Length: 136
Image (cartoon, rainbow, N blue to C red; front, side, top):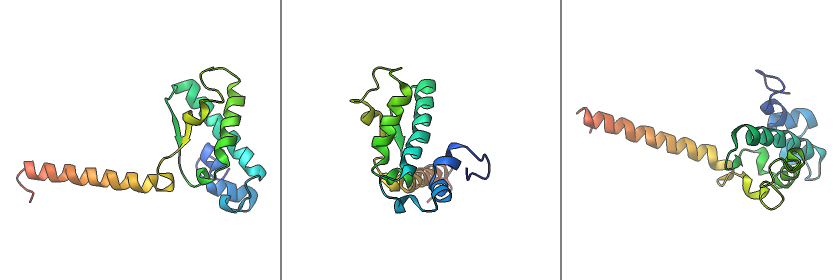
């Protein structure tokens, strides 16, 4: 893996830099049927299995550059169902596409989230300074 802190953690194995290190090309340079995508799907499906079995989330949402590759979600869904092996019957071919989903904002999710957090912090600071009599 390429993570300088943990080596073979998920980020070190499945991130954009990990793809580049392993295959010598960035994810967007790889063809859709490249073997890299099966490996990516496997790593991410293992994460989803662990999250599902340990925490039972209502939904698993993936964002980031790697997840912009359209072929990743069908492969991820298939691998997830294979690994789950029918353990949770409610998660099946009909439902997995609503359970493991791409971030609605795509690659802008982190930027927009940061802006929203900055707006909230700004509003709180102004409320505090106004109530203390030091604001505008």
